[in-house]
Image (cartoon, rainbow, N blue to C red; front, top):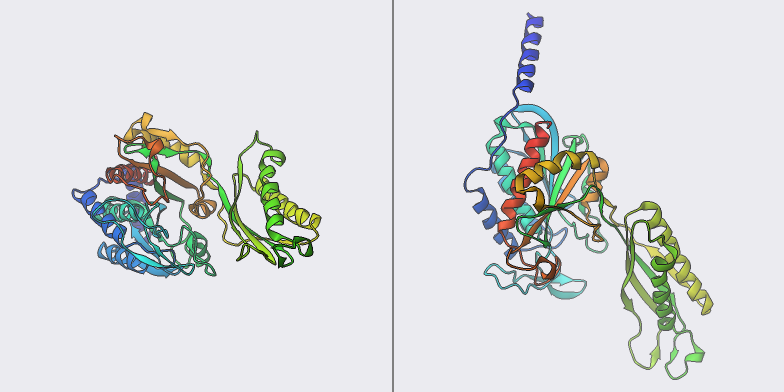
Length: 431
């Protein structure tokens, strides 16, 4: 009798595999809900590790869909687990939830009026990078897949992540913290077979997608340099050591790292000093200066070379002036975002069939960074861009992500969701 039961189960499994489920379709009305959710999130943005309202909205939605839900991962992160009706792979889908300390200048009825304290200043808060659209689109995909779970081959993990733009000073957050707290471990549902995500961009018009196999977005590191000076009156500089002059020479010296030390025939790199703080009066030479900057790279060995060159030059310039400089590489940098070549080759034709082959653009290397990179280091990843600039506008001239004028044509969200749904259908079917 036991052998008969085993035989029946085995035959059923073979039949299921030989008769794959039909592709899941987006129900009527989902796109309209996505726009409504997006506008609500846009009008109520929250900074990293502070996305309490957003997380509560997401968690309530996932629970209403009958999913297993976990909250409070990496402070405000939310995950939902959807078990399909048929055996198949395990796929993770990710959206980021945080906004930016930017005062909105876009004239829309749902523009953000929110302000908050950031680094001791009152600032506006805006979804200037489109994370509101990412959350809304993933909520829509969750509803779509949950509505037809009996036809779903495999299981899906929906990841709503806080602090992609970086955690507040003195805190941890983002993808790294979610993983450190067991996201891809047996604490929850184990390691997925792959992870996918998407990001809206003003650099592409509505209807277009962009992706690149292999390294696509740069690693990102923050560094600081503290220059020690000797305070004196501005009228008697010879009695002190001017850290402003030393710091200025360090900034100029760093400019030749990329132009003179790096093999420019390989992958690019960027070294930028974005902050220089020193002094309080025009006639006082201060006792110190502080520089803050960023490093972008696409190659781990090149990254290490650049880091070493910055420290060597900073200390060398300071020593030549008779003083010292302390170099510090800050924790929390982002890895290179790499699209798995095999997964990209497998799913690019699916995206092309969805929007048209000529509308799937091979992106150039992007010196911006994404902490989706940490998920894609754990399992094969696919990350693509969704155009949201109106088709009657020149995308090359559109205000960029992070601009107070960043504008989303909401028609682009339907394109992004259709593309992701097609990719999910194909991946889950093993095509």
